[in-house]
Length: 261
Image 1: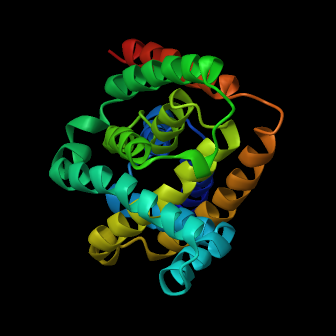
Image 2: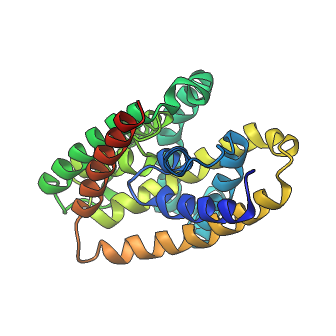
Image 3: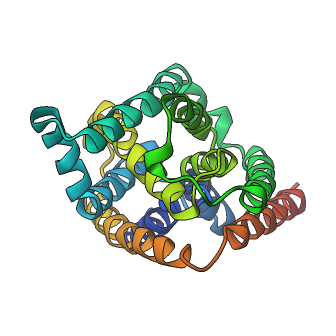
């Protein structure tokens, strides 16, 4: 039986890991697997992602308002940012639709998740170590946005991490740590919103109404805290702790998988 307590725990995990570069989808699969909880399925994942969408909208409401108004009043910088986000969102949307069935089946293997967790952890570590700190969001080109969008498309595989892939790519392109996170979070908004609209019908056939509500609330609250916390953390720290965490978790998952053979 999937309980309200479990829903709150998974909601909190979703909220924290959606924005930290450690893969929320991997954690939503691995935590029930490690604790032998019932897998609540993709419909519950949708509810949790809608919670993190609300956290994004609450935190970045002024930026989205400025971008919307820029279409009417001609404010150049917000309008340019909006077009960059559109360019960055297209690859993830297309590949997400094409590989939806694989996301529900073969991409949920714990060993595959461990491999992608460790691999991207190494890439994140290297990219952050060598990445420049001189470029900001205002320096992004449309080609930069396309490259970051292509990396976001890899997040269809649990363990890659949407924020991890996009932040890593932004760091490779020389974007400042905090601005890499800000652009990653902004571009997550249309992707999560689009996926939520496509999958929303699944919420009405789960029989988990109370669990969905509590999970949604927990993911919203902890998602907002994760955004605020990460941006403050990056003022004085690097992404190295997240890279190490990814690698350590991958080792634990492989050890548990081998022990259960």
